[in-house]
Image (cartoon, rainbow, N blue to C red; front, side, top):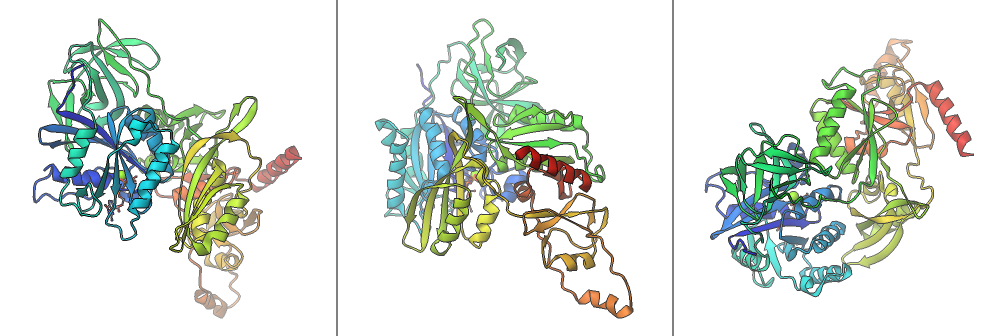
Length: 610
Ligand SMILES: Nc1nc2c(ncn2[C@@H]2O[C@H](COP(=O)(O)OP(=O)(O)OP(=O)(O)O)[C@@H](O)[C@H]2O)c(=O)[nH]1
Ligand SMILES: [Mg+2]
């Protein structure tokens, strides 16, 4: 089969924050993608607002650079475990990967996940040890750990024979010998071009084009991001469109564009191996194939790992609904969720008994929280339920998802952390003392035990601990795990919060509200250290018996309220609670707002359990 020697397709994969997007910055700069005096944002590929705010990559994105006369298509992927579906999809576009590993942190849970996927897809792998400038680098140990990881994942001899490049992505330099520092990225490109094969594919063969991602253009509408597997894809041509449901339709291709640095350039046609953007096919989705009208050959539908977490999203049912957002109806929410599943293969949407609520399934809390946050910014009001894990039956027994968890903490916090995890029935697999006052702990733990864990973990370790986890498989149900040990402080009426009421409550509870905040009956205004809910009048006015007493009110110090972010709120709530989300506000509330009804329902649940 003829090759395309002037082309390479690679994906950059790694654990979160190991420097993928920064390395791509360096590659873009080196290839002259920007004018000498051009102002370019740091991590330019992280172009979404939420990506810039959170400092992480959420969606996989393409760029392309030239080295000599070779064009290199590069896919930047997210490193956070929740967006693993993006990585899996990116791997279907490429022939090789750059596996980045932080020179100090070494391989992490997500390194393992992405490497496993790359090995399964039989891609060429180049290992890049990044951040070699870190004062705490442990390059030789990290390399040993990388070899161990390959062995552990049953890599073939060929695969274990990977080349290693050492980089300081921030400075934009690479070297093949960690003892001598690099001066340019040339060594990097040389290894890359030698080790990653050019794409195979026959120009004369019948057309086969795989839709691997979706994008949108304000002028052209939906764009299919495709890999041309064989044949030549031409503008304005008519093709057979093999849909995911097995049917075949006729479709007219609009424009065909190729990536150059950060822009799209229109072309007449795209040959085998190219990653092309196609407009004009309304309703196209990921995994479909454009192929020859006369001789259609659909490619396999892209499969990704199953979702492990689910959460309900429905219309805002609080008494103050409709005062803030402009997208309120069930129909609008349904349409938005349907739009999401077209572009996001790792998310599923399932109807519930209620016509105004849907179950949304995904890979993790952050992935679901990002969807909700995006909808919030688009003007939606919603009620969102507690995330819970998905269960399945294997051989007649109930199974639940389990995660591999890696933790690093200063020695003095090991006791507290092991206790915290013991309560959650986590099993310790390994404990390693780095000898520099830091200890690394590896656990296997039920995914549900980790919901809400991060907040507690950071409190226990005074914000110093590092934690990451990734889905490892399904195991038999581990029995009840009690997670939140505290109850909620619940407003018993509608009104405006008073300083006087706060003063009385702040000694015993942690409050989430400030004076003059508007509350309603059933809204959660704080946390009760005891494991039961407490109904309070948070709007209570002080009885003015005399002038002096009124003046003394000013001198009482109010503790600042605890503010929960959207993610924290979702993690925090219990089964009978939910979160009200509007473009401006995140409020916690009881699902049943009326206290009498709530008490009856609680009694019923208790009776059913005994
Ligand atoms: N010291 C040092 N810091 C680096 C280097 N490369 C990246 N960083 C820093 O590491 C942090 C994370 O970099 P990113 O490029 O966002 O990492 P990423 O792998 O794309 O992260 P995700 O996409 O969220 O998984 C940033 O603060 C970078 O400035 C390096 O070579 N040396
Ligand atoms: Mg990134």
